[in-house]
Image (cartoon, rainbow, N blue to C red; front, side):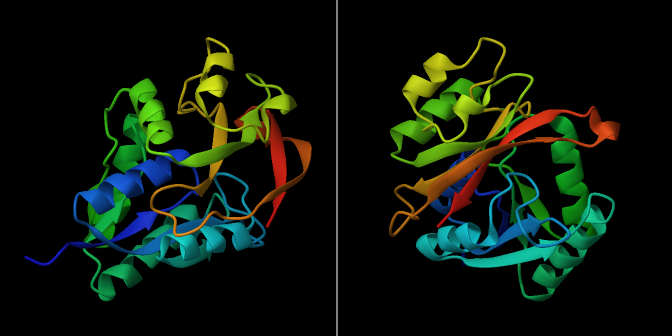
Length: 224
């Protein structure tokens, strides 16, 4: 049988990367990485990464990058429309990096079903700390690029995601940041043909929308 053809919902972070690694190992033919950008196309929706670094990741992974722009209000319709285009191109599966948040899985299965695709979650219900150690043990390299200021200070931005970091995380911060405490950028590892060059140009603090609690975030300003 031929390998099932898939797209991957790509954030550029460690959970995405580990889920992609597993999907490829399991025999999925991942043809596209789908990255969702903000309305202006300046950075990725989830991790605040510049498009040039997302493209560099895709080039190093040898998988085509597809990006789409959307605000939060239009996110679902834009995402679903892109999945429908994938389906018309022969894609049958969508792969996601979520671990155990049921609401996320429900949404992913809904948008995939709307396009006639099957959702695949290679990390689903795996122990979070075990996944963190697996990512590191495989030889992937990542840094923290966004942290929730209610849990972590700006000094964590730019830090390597390694065993030392796991030891330094406060007890109320999940090892995978699955509750939104932090996000990462992967720049090297066994599926990369070459490391992705990056430079930390600075750290800025922003305040999230009032309707979502006015949360302070510390963000990396990365360049290639």
